[in-house]
Length: 507
Image (cartoon, rainbow, N blue to C red):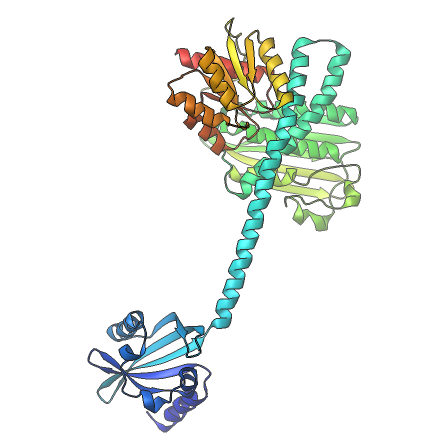
C-alpha cells in the first residue's frame, strides 16, 4: 500500500461515521484485528482490548454472521447484507454491512463496514403502515360499495317486481304509460346499482368477462330501445345506425356490451338538451374469423372542456357542479365503461368540444361464428299445473311480490321467513320447488340448503339474492342449489328459471 492509499485509508478509518473493523482469518477462526473509533464508542471497549479475540466468543449468536464471513472468503468477493445489533445500553439498531476479502503478506483478512440504517427502517415502517392503512381504507370502501349495491337491490326488487306483475295483468293505456315512467326510473337505478357493484369488482380484479355466442345486434337494440323514451321526452333526434356488414353471431359478452351502450346513451341524452344523439355500430374484419366491433355514441350536447378530458374515466369524477346542475349523475358510468372495454381487450376513446358535443368510441375485438342460428329467446313455456312452491324470504315487500308472482304463474305458494322455518315446513309436507333467499335471520339460505342436502332431501332449490358476485353464485351451487336468480326478479325470469330447473331434474 503506497503512502497516498495509506493516508486515504487512515482518514476513512478515523473519520467515517460508519463502523469499520478488520478481521484476521486464522484457520476456521475469525479474530478481531482492530476496530475504528466509531465502533469503539458504540461497544464501549477500546480496540486494543479486543485484538486477538474470537468473534465466536463475542457474538451472542454468531452462526448467521459467520455464515456471511465464510461466504465472503469462499467466493472471494464483497458481501452485502442487513443485520440488527444490540449495543450495551440495550437498544437495537439496524445496519447495512459490507465485507471485503483482503490478502496481505500471506495472511487473509476481512475488512468490514457497517452503516446505521435506523432512519431507513423507520421510514420503511411508516410507509408500510401507511400502505396498510390505505389498503384497509380501500377494502372498507369496496365493502361499502358491495354492501350498498346489495341493499339497493332489495327495494329495487319490490319496484321492478310490482311493475312486472302489473304489466302482466293489466293492459290499460294510461296505466301502461305510468308504468313506463316508473320502469325507466327503476332501470336507471338498476344500472347505477350494477355500476357500483362492478366498480367494486373491477378494483378488486374480481370481474369476469363471460364470452359466449351472441347476435351483436341484440345488445345494441336492447340498449337503444331502453333509452328511447328518455330521448323522445326531450325531443332529441335519436338515431341508431347499424352497419349491414355486422356478423350474425360473434363470441362476446353481450351483457357487458349492453351495459356499456346503456351507460353511454344515458350519458349522451342527459347532457344533450337539443339536437342529435346517435349510436353507430360497425364491424372491421381483421383476420379470418375475427374482427373489431366498433360502437360510437355521439351527441350535440354541452361537451367537455379540453382541460377536463384527461379525468374522464376516473371513478366518481364530475367535471364541475355548474356543469352538472340539472344533469345529475354519480360519476361512475364512464369509469365502468372504460374498465369493461379494457377487460374485453378493447379500447375506449372520447373526443369532445365544449358547447359542440361529445363522441365516445368503444372498440371490442371479437371472434365470428360461422354457423348462424336464431338466437332470439322465445318466451318460457308454461309451468306444469299444480306446482307446490315454498318461498323462504324475510323482507315483507319481497314476500308480497314473490307470492303474487308465483300465484300469477298458477302455482300453489307457501311463505316462510327463515331457513330454519323452510326446513321445518319441508319436514312437514313435500314441495315441488323452493325459492330460497340467501340472507335471512336465524339461518341463511345456504346453510339451510346444506342441511337439507345432508338429510338427503333433493327438492329443487333456486337461490334468490340481492348479491350478484360470482363467489356467492358458486357457493350457492356448491351448497346444492339448482339455480340462481339475482334480484330484482321479473315474472318471465322467474318462470324461465323454474322451468329450466324442473326440466333439468327430469332429464
